[in-house]
Each structure stands twice: as C-alpha cells, then as structure tokens.
Length: 70
Picture: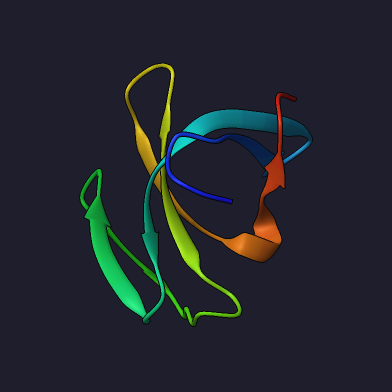
C-alpha cells in the first residue's frame, strides 16, 4: 500500500473508507481529535495515516487495512 491508495477497515459492525496520506515505518504517536493514538510500525508492518471523505484522520496498522473500496 502507498500514498493515495483507497483503503477500508472494520469499524464496529461497519466498515470505514479513506485514502492513505502518509506511511510510517517506525512506531508513531499522533494526536487525533484530542486523543493520543499510537501504532507500532516497521518496514514489514507499517502504520498509515488515512484521511476519510469527511476530513477526519485515523492512524491504522497495515494489518487493519484492506486495499480498495468497501
């Protein structure tokens, strides 16, 4: 997966969708909507910042994401 790819992930009983904005290959911590979110990351298991259509951002591990539209 790379910047610009459309991805989706499970969110409760539903699925959410967005576009990859940035790839992290080292453990990263971000403040999103006032909440600190941390993901362990490596070259083999990167973390991605994803922007949803409504403008909100999420930080997800590669294993949480599926490539393509939901």
